Length: 198
Image (tube, rainbow, N blue to C red; front, top):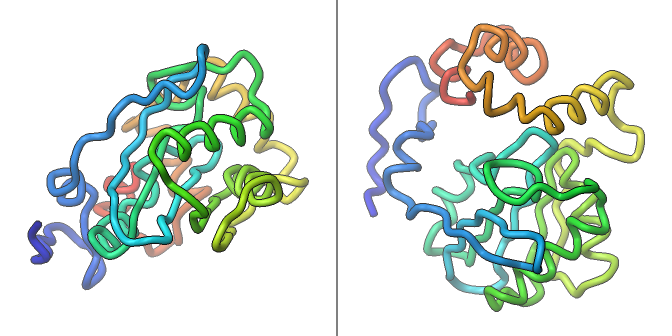
């Protein structure tokens, strides 16, 4: 693995572009975790405790790409696409309990025991419930997006995007750029960083 950062574009110093991370890390694999659910996941074995990343509502398994790049080889790492996100299993009902069961089945299948669970946005609720039911070495909650912490418009918008799979239709359009700028970026964020985010 190359530790040299090949930065192009208008990125902050030390920033590792997504393309570089994608080139240097292995491809995700598919794991059947139940009769109805197959998850896309990237598992990088390493020292314990493993860190398990749970993305938010419109996220993907690549959301923690800077952390995956930084901690590769130093910790076991697991990131995955929630059922209903990405191009694989669609859960008839998107429930926190169902996602917790999927995560437990995935960690069992991969031999990940007592992880540090990192939840982002909607993933915070999954991380909390997982930790309440299964032994963990730690829980990291980042930008909690459930338990009425989100704006009233966000949950219906997320449901619409997931139901119609719009995240696959609009990945790099002007509409998604505008949404990213408005909802996820600082006003001084460079276009290069917005493109990398998308």
